[in-house]
Amino acid sequence: MLHEEYIMGDIKIGRMVLGSCATNTYFIYREGENRAIVVDPADQGTTIYASLFKNDLKVEGILLTHGHFDHIWGLAALKGAVNRERTEKGLEPIKVYALNEERELLGDAKMNVSEMAGRACTAEADEYVRDGQELTIAGITFQVIATPGHTGGSCCFYVKEAGFLISGDTLFQESVGRTDFPTGSMSSLVRSIREKLFCLPEDVKVYPGHGGATTIGYEKENNPFCV
Image 1 (tube, rainbow, N blue to C red):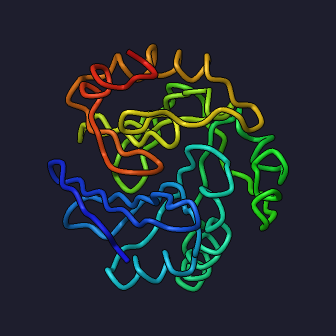
Image 2 (image 1 turned 60 degrees about the vertical axis):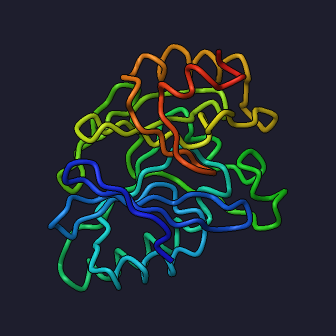
């Protein structure tokens, strides 16, 4: 179930590929600790929970890069399983974080395309964040980078300490996210990548919502949508 694992210093990032769209669900934690953050629980939330539990990883927060169905179908089940365990132990519930501009899309089954995909669902964050905000969860600090385009409230999460970016469906290896769904805009997407992501160091590793990893430097030279 845990398909890959990468090490940046003492921060580890693992990946599960889930759902009908082969979406990357990431889990991030510091080596030697069992506190983890999950990004984009794509589907099969109870399976995500069980896989992390089996590896002695306890979820302390969930980040959403955007609100499309294939990135949130597993959210309710994962959050529910985690919070049941935490309640039994007398711990506070975990929080889900998303960009404020994604609030409407998350809450509308037509806008987030889940209705069209055959499993209508909605979601909401416990905390809506803003561009440039820093979140420290499980001892790891994430910088929120608003990248409208794939959706109006898409964002990326940058871990400067470890030199990697979770890009959601904004930036892929030699490609970008589609923009033909509600709130999408190709001009906004390209502008977000050029102005918000391509200013990061070239050796920053990029982990996208679908497909394999890449780097900022490689995409600056080879991405046909943004060169």
